[in-house]
Length: 111
Image 1 (spheres, helix red, strand yellow):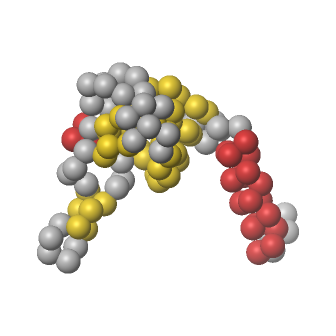
Image 2 (tube, helix red, strand yellow):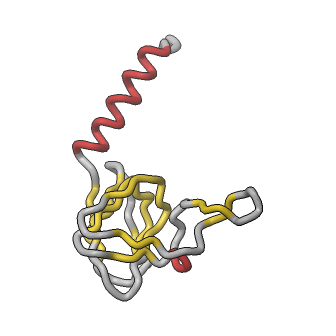
Image 3 (spheres, one colour):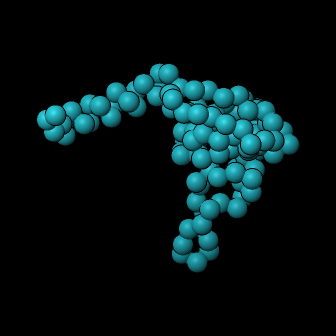
């Protein structure tokens, strides 16, 4: 098998990214149970709060000493807002309704 050129690798990556955008797995989350992705986007259908103490969002915040740490502050999403990232898992607090997007082929599970 011949080595792929950079252009071929970039084209394959672009095709994979486009496929994920066109054919995502979409999970409607309305409960306070941990859902495992990973997810690449979250859209709030109503104001929703992600309980960061119960999930792994991979979101970092300033640790007040010129460094970064996993966020300790719950993430409040206003209705209609979409955030993007590499969210390993998502758990809402007592209320909320979000759509969580995962790449095709992702085995989404619930804890």
